Length: 626
Image (cartoon, rainbow, N blue to C red; front, side, top):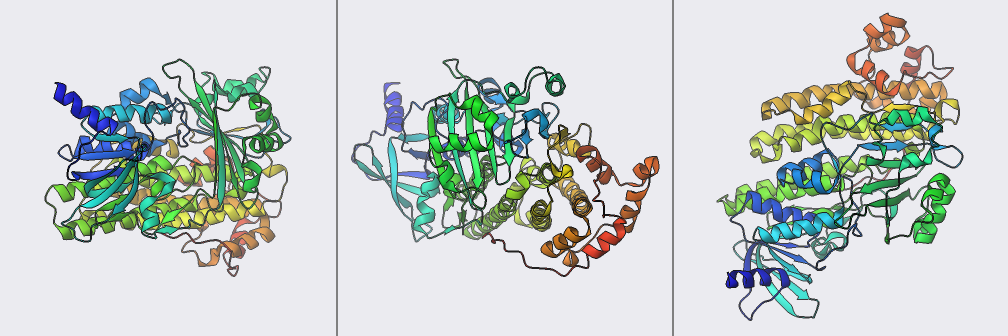
């Protein structure tokens, strides 16, 4: 027992003797969320692998640690709870999340109860979590050490000498805080060094994403409750949330080119909860300089969300960090030369919708499959094909994701367009990417995986058209009664609805053939959702601005347009209209409200014909690298 304890101490404290470099099947450079999660996944799925994690910061980690990315969504929650086997732990030590909640329209002049509220009407059946990153990462370290991971805390990766021969090991050069150096041999190296991006920098793989935005965030002690911003006398508003679950949401206060978040963090061992508060601003509308310090951030909140400022101005910040142009891509993330980039060391899109942990989940799972192929007898050709396939899919996933953000600044301030965007983004996310991960489609051999990648390309093409449409629609919306915030609750997803059923389908077990048929059906539905978005935009803008929108997005070159039957249904009355509408059109009406018509938007068929005849006009928009 004494020798076992000494060995464990060497693993955790970095003790070593003078000997030849120790060999590991995989060395993970970085012990944050991505690195620790991968180590746990490898111990669960590839227990024979020798795994080392190199982490600069030694424990104990502070509660509500200075991290961003506390809010998880469905894909990453499935990864943490099912793939990593942490469901009971997450439910005990962290908060179940009440979805995403949005208050668009800007807060300079309106009370919160006068603003449009977009969000779920009740707790979701498929769970997601609000994560205290400090506690989670500290607990993962302890779990990994107990499971046999070699954790070298207080060490930094200084450099990696990549082997030129596939039979040789990489050499990972590390340094302790006291200056002591050491070299490890690694069959595979995983860069999880965060924004330092050691390997991406070394290999010249950095590439811009085309999305220019900035963030500042801090933590405060205690609970900051969105409900406290509305007087108790406004019972109609509070009665929307009879169980008082709003504050479990990731709450977004939004205006043109910005959003401010509140995220609750569960109490730790000391019994004290924290709240994460953050600001995201798009360069086009709000310079980074306006939020580059805590004092400037508070002044920014006072200007744009004064009610929030009154609530948080006297709460001391536990920490503060800001990032300029946080979004970045990479020319490659997985290589048959036996390395991969995970977490922030690879790509990062945006904190909106919390996709960071989704990318961790996918990158870690791809890396695990590559290591299985290497260690369990896969030949070099097979591994090279797998690395290329995973890298191609991952960067396409990033390219499709970045479309959600890079020109979304105008949408954030428009309640009507924002509600349509949330519907679209949820619809496509639950239809393809979540199902791809929940059903572990990435585990399929190349011959079976190809048909899913083809579907991904089709969803991606629709994504590009939809996000361009939403942005250009918001840019042309003339301020007026129809586009002002209204004191309504847009329930996304409405229960019951097609959209809510897509969410529930995440819990449905399906074979690969059934998943493929499901995705094909949802792809057809997604095309129809895009048709409805086009109609809503044209109807709201009227003939002049509608034609201008059509030219900006190139509607005349789109492969389809709303059908004559759909246009005829729009002018029908009462029950005849309802019966004439397709299930998708009815679902969007129930979720988003009836299509609102510009005074000059009739007759609708003529408006559509004019729009789809408008000559295309180039719109300046950066193209992200994939």
